[in-house]
Amino acid sequence: MKELPVDKGTRVTLHFALKFDSGEVVDTTFDKNPATLNIGDENLPQNFEAYLMGMKAGDKASYQVPPEKAFGQRNPNNLQVMKRHVFGADMVLEPGVVVSFADARQQELPGTISRVEGDEVEVDFNHPLSGRTLTFDVEIIDVEPVGPAH
Image (cartoon, rainbow, N blue to C red; front, side, top):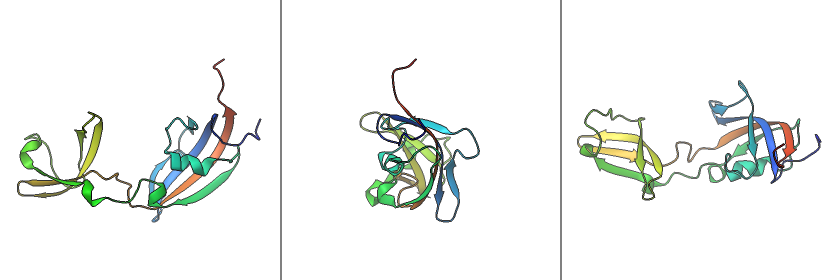
């Protein structure tokens, strides 16, 4: 059973860490319970799943993930300038604050305030990790077939 490789139709239990080139950890499970996910359930972006394919229980690896395979390049069109009055009067507006908006389909769309100048507020809708090369450390703990629940 321990020889089953990661593929579509498998449930994988793993530890992972995402880090910047500087070594700063963005997210990790190594210091807590491992994550369990079904390959193809979109819990993990497809490009990250691709790195896991073929790995088996006990395998460890570290991958350099370029922006194109992680969260994309930064898009200057994703910077929007809005008037101060569209935000609540009591809202703290300063660079780094994340604000939630609704997109055209009424899905939640987070934006990060990048600049506040007079009556103008610039909001960055790029993914916070866009444009960054990430290190993806992974340790596969278990791989099992996804079958009917017992």
